[in-house]
Image 1 (spheres, rainbow, N blue to C red):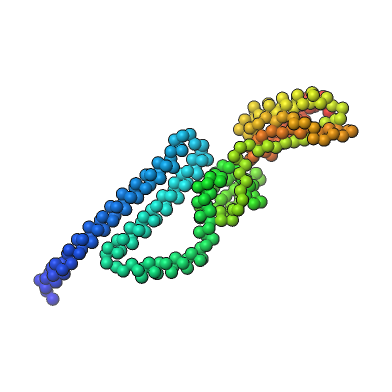
Image 2 (tube, rainbow, N blue to C red):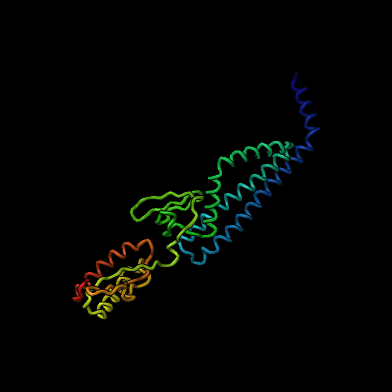
Length: 274
């Protein structure tokens, strides 16, 4: 077969199929252009809706949550629109997509059974972000673990407690969350005094100390410690309840510091401990 015959064959083939090829090419181009435009519009709309709170002085932790949610939505939009565009392009090229979809459905079903836990974790992580149950930097209690959220991912949550232990918890296993960072935590310490101690003087000294501690540690103490009254009364000693509001993650640090200062202030003012 010489060159002229090959050219004739190609010309004949092109004459028969050129219209279909041009038509299919235009359709594919239209699909790609539509995909790019729709994707850009959807992502821009999502970006405006999610970044509007950031412009209103949202805190760093909430801002991190919004950015994480934006990333998840962006990935979802890319996947859904991309999958639809690919199916439309394959169908435009003349391929029968029914066997492909059937095969994909069977494979997806098999994978789905094997990845039920993974899917549950991801969906739970998405709802945690949507509902703002907690965010990076919050002090929370999940099951037996209490600590600061160091990382909130779509599959796992990482907590670090006060002793430095790192807890990695699957989002799908989280049934109940105690978020201590939405407002202050009310804590107290009972101060034992001698039964013959001057109660009014002791209250004045302790209330002044509570105010001083709050001024010294404003990022840790949110409500100054105050004397709430006598929690116990006895022949040899009485006990004053001294309570205040603190940021949950600092409660142990504040109470340790407070107990030291209570001892020093009572000794300085000649008020005997019970």
